[in-house]
Amino acid sequence: MQGLPLGKPPYGRITALDMNRGELKFQIAHGETPDNIKNHPALKGVTVPRTGRQGRIGTLVTKTLLIAGEGGFATQANGQRGALLRAYDKATGDDRGAIVMPAPQTGSPMSYMVNGRQYLTIAIGGGNYSGELVTYRAPR
Image 1 (cartoon, rainbow, N blue to C red):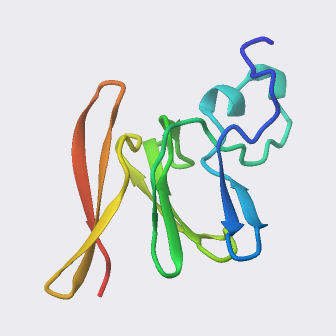
Image 2 (cartoon, rainbow, N blue to C red):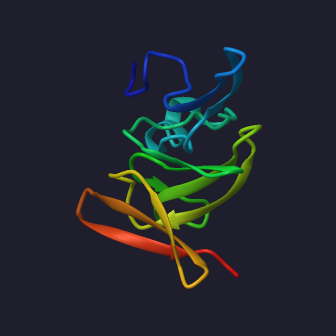
């Protein structure tokens, strides 16, 4: 209706299950609220919580973190346009940090070590942004 989705959010989420107990561990909205919803005139004055965004994402799970990029482009609070690569606490789903990528994730993240330094590489692309691999290095 009026360009807004008919279904209620979350529009993208990550669900973690405890496979030993067969229980839901956590479920979180993954991704910021899409710009077309956040800036819709019909929602002016309404506080819309993070709704998540649709997109095909791959995740990387480490001993303590779950890492996933957002699908689709979004405008960040500082006006920068791109997509976030997010890290969540693997046990609770709490946000642990995020970095802005110039384009959304298009492939699963991968991690590797070189000379004692950890790296994370992810395929990104979309819109007018050509596909490429970007690599981030973890701090010492």
